[in-house]
Length: 165
Length: 329
Image (cartoon, rainbow over all chains, first blue to last red; front, side, top):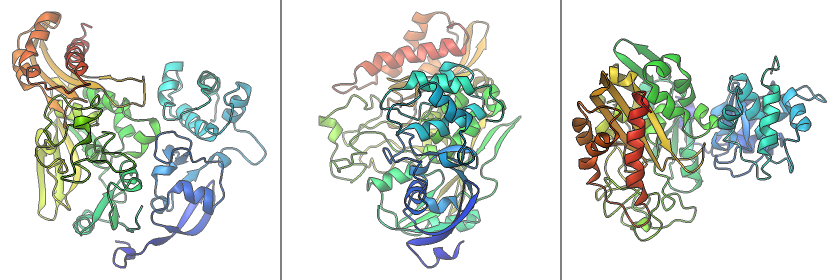
């Protein structure tokens, strides 16, 4: 067991790997990955919507898979590769899915957009962008209060066969 | 959320020792536990992280059956080719569960430990609920009971169990392997979840410190010809109003053996044992005969004030699931 099992402590020193960079920080054991990203590391692209796993706006990739950072304890992600919306493309460039969201008008207020794009990238990489129905099914964990769903589906579909997503 | 200590268990023995401490809970995917803690439903002082335990995330399909490690993620089981081929109801139930993100995170063991979605249990401002605070009463009895159980409830609790895949596992006679301070044991799926009776807060047969290690499903003709049908109010990312998992062994167009479990209608996956007997020899295309075979089980239904629709909906769901599994729908 880690030594903190013998000496109960409310905080833990961890190393987080975010967008290819290593960060050392002391986290409150109760703290979510979402709060660590936004408050400690200022990756504010990841949004806090419901904070209870219902809206998807906090979606990031952990070890390449889409996950909800609001339902993940930061302390549990020690050493794992985390990708946020800021890490999808090199600084100043747009990832093809980001470009497609602009091209297809896939957002209005934009609050859900980082989570939508992280889910869209995972949906395409995992081979679940084969039809509009399949896209809707695999994107259903991301809610859009502006209801830009048709445009989001067309943005994802436009990227479904793009190489290297 | 109250503060807690955090420890990552390196071995199963360590995990059991740690989990057996007072006020301790284990975590795998965290998709349930974090919300319980945020809402004040549970207040653990120690959290034991199981994710580093090796070998508990395996998915093995061989001639004997399917073995799912408790840490296998829902999405990995759903996507597994041999599960899709030989245990389709399990894959279908998983794909119809939650969202892509939650399926990536949530473990199979944790799925079975889910707690009801009854809004009174989940209330952000605590309301009377015998699951949440034993003896406080049941707000659903005199309140909104549209979501509530029609089978197996008690005067102390009318909540339903929310899992989809548990319904498929119940229909296919799964076995749950657990390990704890008293050693290892196996629990037949039908016995794992408890009915509420006068202690709705005790939901499973697990003792404190016991951990699910794997779930086993026997290989059979029934599992190969199985189907999961989920009826809900949105096309995706919604819990079942009613669902049915069925397994069929056919002879010509007639049923040799059937297995049926319902979801969304009871405090645990609800097997229709009388129907399974009555369906022997019934032609799958004879909808009236299929319907009659359900009479005995459905005579036990006790709907509340707002969920009477579930009785007819569940009957139709079973019939359609049987005919879909048998290829006549």
